[in-house]
Amino acid sequence: MILQVQHVTKRFGGLTAVNDVTFDLPKGQILGLIGPNGAGKTTLFNCINGVYSPTEGKIIFNGKDITGSPTYKAAALGLSRTHQIVRPLNELSVEQNVVVGACYGREKLGLRKATAVADEIMEFVGIRERADQLASSLNVAQKKRLEMARALAARPYLLLLDEVLAGLNTAEVSSMLDTIRNIRERGVTIIMIEHIMHAVMSLSDRIIVLNYGELIAAGTPDEVSQNPEVIEAYLGDPGLAAQLLEEERA
Amino acid sequence: MKRLRFPGLWITLILVIGVGIIPAINGSASLRESMFTILMSVALASSLNIILGYTGYVSFGHIVFFGVGGYLGFYVISQHGWNILPAMLVGGLSAAILAFLLGATVLRLRGAYFALATIGINEAMRALVINIPILGGPVGMEMHFSEYKKYGGPMQALWMVYWSVLIVTVLTIVVSYYVKKSKFGLGLMAIREDEDAAEVMGVVAPRAKTWAYVLSAIFPGIIGVLFFFKNGNIEPGDAFRLQFSIELIVMVMLGGAGTVLGPVIGSGIYQQLRKVLLTSPIFKNIQLAVAGFLLLLIILFIPSGAVGWLRSKSVKLRRVLE
Image: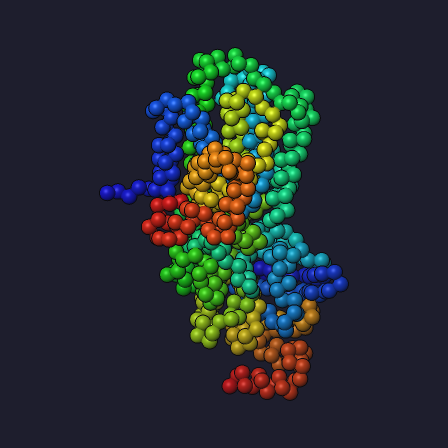
């Protein structure tokens, strides 16, 4: 198991954003994390990589307990992530952004080697020709790729992708899906939060579903999409849901 | 022709050294004095730039390191008859230690809170020094004239101090350049752009910020020793002059925060401007108000400063100016 999340709960004052969530993630898989808006998906990510310290529970990464340790520790151990709302280092060039990832990630490379890695990664995610531009000058799709490049440059074992497809057009989505598949082929384990159902269904080996902070379902994409509780959480009316899912498949 | 390897560094160094040796050529003491002020400002502003420009933390009371270094260095010279060189080490080291200790605490604060805390530290150190009798309390300390004799008389001593300031300034610029070009510097700039995102990428921000703060304190500590040795006396008001701190920020912003050349150009322009203002009957009393107004204009219209603005204008300039 590369990641074990054990009974993780996160409370903000009276609000329980994540409630007693437990799951294991084997190496090499893509795990889809879905749920309606406000279900606590990003909060769970934040607990896993150390942005928040969970109120209760444990996070075990590669056999090490990393509960509540700072984000840079997680990064050093090989846990990288992208942000739902992109956070480029605006006044630095695209290349410098990626070099930061390589310099301070798992391998802690020196500048020269990091630049070589950055070159390769920029090519891989398709932002190589933007290398010298300032990160602030990229459009949304490119910024999402930049987020991904920075995370990958760290050579992570586990990559948390927080809605990398949101805000992209159809062509951009399908090219991003290819990129994610290629990342998996490099042996990186992935957890992805995603709202675009056909994408998450086609990519994920397993899916877990959060609703009001609780894990309400887990299983293969097919199992999860048949689960009445999941359908209700998403759409309220199971009849309508079934109809929509039919349309999605067609 | 082979391309110069570090054009940004060489341009800055040639400028500083070229201007710095002018007083030696014509041997003018008054020119030497005004050059001393400019070089000192260059070193202080370049140091401040490491924490302000690279790391993005506005150290408002940065002059505290000049004051503390100056005080301790002056103390060992005037009271214990130390030579200037070990005294400079005392000054640099004490400023660095203070920055290290403060780093662990104040650098947790962000934005305006950090800026306010640094002002508080400066005022607290001033109050502390006033209450330490062996440092001369509120009246400060004086140095016996005979101290200069060790260096061959006052004239030679003043030249020696001038060359020392030039060397320290050159060192500051070299450090500033290498920090900017290093992995460490890249981490600092990542912190400046988005500290949380930088940490997610693995930058150990608390450690990096502390070392940036220490680096930015060393040279002001050394410069403080040279300045007060030249003056022959030290007082709390001169050592911890908040106004000078503010002027340093203006210099960095004017030339371009986060660039190597910027603080150099900014200090030069600002000190020239200040000289004009101080000798003008209309402006001499509102000189600082002009500085404040200037800062306002820079932040509103060219927030990246003169060098930053030039760099944004052409790719060629970006390659040669750092």
